Image 1 (cartoon, rainbow, N blue to C red):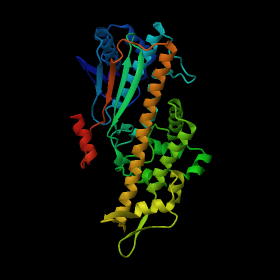
Image 2 (image 1 turned 120 degrees about the horizontal axis):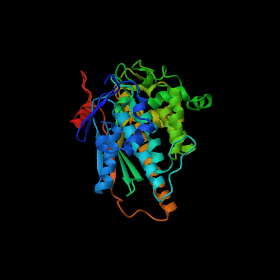
Image 3 (image 1 turned 90 degrees about the vertical axis):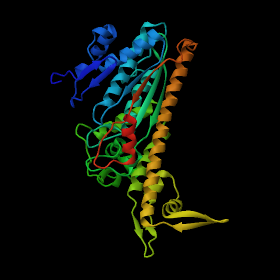
Image 4 (image 1 turned 90 degrees about the horizontal axis):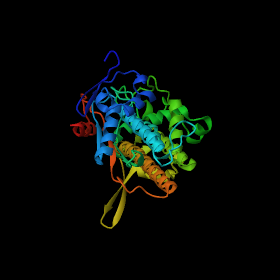
Amino acid sequence: FRCGSIYTATGPLLISVNPFHALPELYDDAAMHRFRSTPLEACPPHVYAVAEGARQALLRDKGSQSIVISGESGAGKTEAAKYIMRYLTSASSASSSSASTSPAPASASGVVEGVEGVIQRSNPITEAFGNAKTQRNDNSSRFGKFLKMTMDRSGRIRSGHMDHYLLEKSRVTHQASGERNYHVLYQLCCGADAELRKRLHLKSVTEHRFTSQSECLEVENIDDSHEFAVTVEALRGVGVTKTEEESVLSVLAGVLHLGDLEFGAQKDGNSTIEEGMESKACEVLGLASEVARDALCLRKIKAGLETLSVPKSKVEALASRDAVARSLYTKLFDWLIGKINAALLAKQQQQQQQEQHAPKENQDVFIGLLDIFGFEIMEENGFEQLCINYANE
């Protein structure tokens, strides 16, 4: 381990220990080529060997394969998943080059186009919107992901589909001491230019409640401003239009502004909100102020044929604010995964049109990659954390 040997294996099981520092020579292009050109039995334990083993078994047995990544939070599951995806997309491009089909071209940034390119670009998006700093991990996946990559008889990826599970919604409105909200909220505050900041009424991360309440504002070795540019480029790479991009950023800003809303209490205990306080959130979300105020401060009760509006208490109004913020963020995350899947389908159809026929053989044979959320044992475990731990068990 001290010499950089972080893997050991028994049969198809690979065990890795996080070195907590970069080992680029373990994962470069030369390493990928070695695992593609060397018999598996002669290869040392490695995450690339797991990927190549699944790929060879699929081609040899004509049966689907699955790779499951599980472990404690901070053990390196997210990085392992990225390396497996990188290996399989690289091997797919190499297979297309040697097959009769035309190889997937590379973009100016070096990312392979086609289905493989969409899979590569999905990583920065899911990390920005689904990962956060926890007490034990600076880049912890706060959701589960299953990526299905269908392959043809030459080993080229023909299509893909992503499912996600149990996004940690509570993190949007509350973070424990020493933890952060989702990366993209800090990226937006740090990376937006002056024009965007003005349009979305953005402040610094220290001034928005949802990014500052835990007093953990930065992560060592993560440049939020640079990562914002990477995230935006990835969004455009999976087909997000300019209008859609503006809407995505507006929803994120709306979540931040919702967190800044303060509620007071009248003498009778009913909630109240200062006139105009909701204006920024309403402007970026496209809502009428009176509608938002009523939704946050009133609840409707049906009594017989009548519908009554009953004031909420301050505690109830705060709970409504947080519920709206969590729901907005969750719906946005769902939409982004749908957008990635739509891009994967579009690239598949484009490839089939270019080749003037759809592959008939092995259409339903795939490699599935399950990157499950990390388990953690805290002094106090919330319901979502208990579900995560149970899923790992």
